[in-house]
Image (cartoon, rainbow, N blue to C red; front, side, top):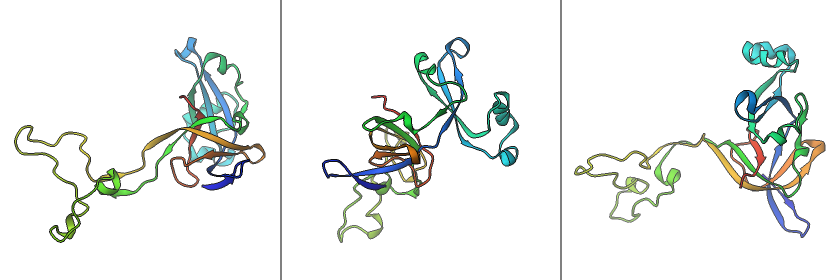
Length: 205
């Protein structure tokens, strides 16, 4: 993250997202597929290493359409009218967004490994005084009893693996767009770590 200054002089914390051009790989139509969606390919592969890096079925999808191979293909549901605005083989760039737009950003959250209940679920912990042993300060409380129901309910918040989950942050503002550098400045933080892959789409709410 970094900070930029608005026109009124206030500082705004932003995340700088590099939006490399995406190839319009194909269309999903209601007549053929039962729904309308836009297929975008991302991460152009070098022709020399494409066969070594990817499977033949994956490369065959691009060869059939005479397109350069890409690393990823992702679908985005759109209306039938919007589908006609994106021709197969064209590029979708950062120019799709403009200053002031609201966007939803989806990514994989940072991993923290095995974490306790205080860090993972923000529990208060137990008393921190001379009457309680040091080892139980960050322990959880009771999880159940032997009588009815005589078991621990599913979904009980306990210590465990934290992070590495698909997360979406909604209604973030586009602070600025820099087309010549393919950069998008989004207010606040987004899921993931530096140089991780995120999906930016128009806000749904």
